[in-house]
Each structure stands twice: as C-alpha cells, then as structure tokens.
Length: 314
Image (cartoon, rainbow, N blue to C red; front, top):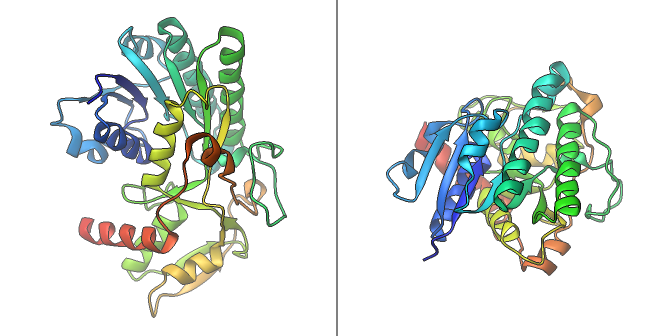
C-alpha cells in the first residue's frame, strides 16, 4: 500500500470520479477539489466514508483555495477541473477562460511551489480535421474550433512552459471521447450516455447534422487507468499523449448500435456546426509504447455496462 497523496481537481466530475476510484484502488490518498457546478456529490458518494478520500468544495479559479490544497506532502496532482461545454463556450467564452486558463495557472503555480508532478488532462477537441483512415497521433496539427478547445490548448501551452522553464514534471493527456456510468445524460453529457438514456426511456435518438461524423469512444475505466498511469510515469514527463481505441464509429452507426427495436432515430439541425469535428480517430501507439496502455473494454461491452447502470439508477 502506498502512502502517497494525490490532489484531483474536478474530482466529483464524470472522469474525475473514475480517476478517484482508480487511485483509491491503487492505495493512494486522494484530496479532491470540485465546485460542484458540473460535478456532483452523488458521483463520489461511495467514497465519502473512505479514510483516504476527502472532498473540498472550491474552485480552481480561486488561487488561495488551490494553494491550500497542495502542500509538501502532495506527491502528484491530476488536473481535470474545467468548463467543458462547447456551445456554452461559444455563448460565454469568459467563463471558459477563467476556469480553463486562469484555473490551470493557479494549479501550475501551486505545483511549482511544492515541486508536485502534474497530469494535465486536455482534450482531443484541439486537433484539426482529419480525413485519412489513420488515427490522429500527437504530432497531428491543432486547430481549436471553439473557445472551449482554445482555452484547453492554451492551458496545455502554459503547462509546457512550466515544464521547459521550471523543469516541473508535467504530462499532458488527451483522452478521446470518454463514456460510461456517472456521465450526464442531458445536453452537457456525451453522445453514448444521451443515446442510451433516451433509448431506455423510449424517446427518439436525435442526431445533429447528417450523422456521418465519427467518434473514438473510450470507456471510463480505460481513460482513468490511462490518466493515472501517465501521471506517474517518468517516461511520460514532458510528453503529450493520446488515449483512443484506434477505431471510430459514425454517429449514425452508434445510434443503430444503441437503439432497441422500435426506437426512432431522427436527424435534427446542428446547433453548432462550425465547431463540429467531422472525424475523431485516435492513435494510442505512443501510450502503448510509453505506458504499456491499451483499451480493454469494447464499445459493445461498454454500452451494455452503461445501460445496466442507467437502468439501476432509474
């Protein structure tokens, strides 16, 4: 059993919750931070009685809160706290700037002051369009198409400056589209959770646009394992690393996979077509080479596990 302590920002969010679970399983002590604007106490309710988990309700945009959370006993920080709504970032870019860039600067400075290694969780949405059948690797051009993606990319650049300028051990992580239990099923959720929830409720599955856009879908436990592995890997320090499955599926085919007999599938007008990434297919070759990581849960298995969880929750 390790005695190491890890700070997780955004700990009560969807991915944060799974990262906390992975860390506790490995024996770490976890200090979580979340302002509960997007995360929920329900997500971490099963950890509340755990003697190695504590949740602080606070915001990364508050410098004092962040600096108090990290101390000389902190061995690593995994930074997940972020505003993540693409449409909202187009409507209100300021909120994404404050959370994603200013908040990240506070985390970086606290890590610098305490010499704490940092796993910065970015997004695959920073990448430029891709037409080829080959997966997007870490050298693929970036082209943020929304303030959400722009602020996340700026946060990565800032983190890289702390690595090069201060020799802070930073690893930048870009998981592709993560799905699974505890993800929201409304508009702020992911397409797999939305489709599965609507199918259970007997509602039509609504596809924005023509449905030919594709996604590389990674199950939550695989993403969490990737984030923890990469954060503590010496070989990964200073690197940008993707986590995908190496295969993609069109939204049309995803709807067909999830829809039960009798469930209607219909197309509706896209509400933010300018920020749509047409093809997302990630290469995990670098993650496999540096970490020995590869996805373990197939899309069919993941959808079935998500369906079972949603049915139990309803």
